[in-house]
Length: 270
Image (tube, rainbow, N blue to C red; front, side, top):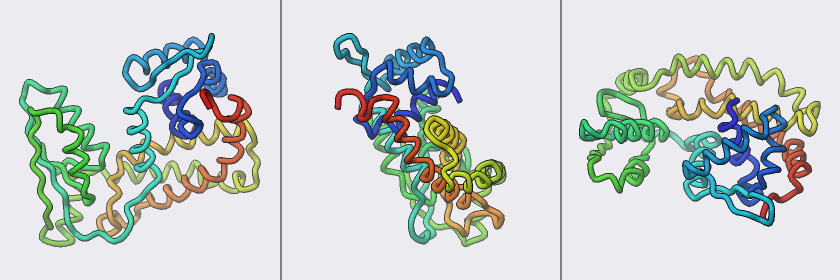
């Protein structure tokens, strides 16, 4: 678990609910549970401030770091992708984005590709991305200020169920993703009984819950949340999601109580 990812996860799962701010000494104490040195935490926090993910202010002799608006948006989007699943049946429509970016703007093109992937679109063919969910508005909003980006959107149906499944297989590596979901299931499903029995307390519950989040959170960003009719018959992604939700909930009380004891309850500025 990299220190930068750890800091983001601590803000995303704990500190955002305690005002979105934390004293540096409290952040050091939290990351110390994962054996991250204070010097590393200081460097990571300063770097995240420089990149626009954190702001800092002084409270007497204390340095306080707090989330920026960009970080709040990122965490909100991230939480939705990690915890939510599309409700209701699929209406059979694909939502397609076709983009054009000048050859000289390679960095912008890569940024666009990452954003499309983050939103759950899959690459069907060169510059053509598809999703069963209508997130075209989010793509347009993300690049509204980039006049060199041309986005064309289509909403259409395929020739039938077989074509839909073929498009899904071509657009996402479902085999590799399913394998990773299965490995997560093998790792955490046997631990549920211990979680239910309350075997992990205090710091151990916090550390376990953070490792659970770290191990799981990257999978939903590779997962387009396809409707059942487009998934392989042996798909275990939904089962892995349910195990994650249960484990995350079972560890919550002990982990959050320990965070409150460690940083003095409600966090900085509250």
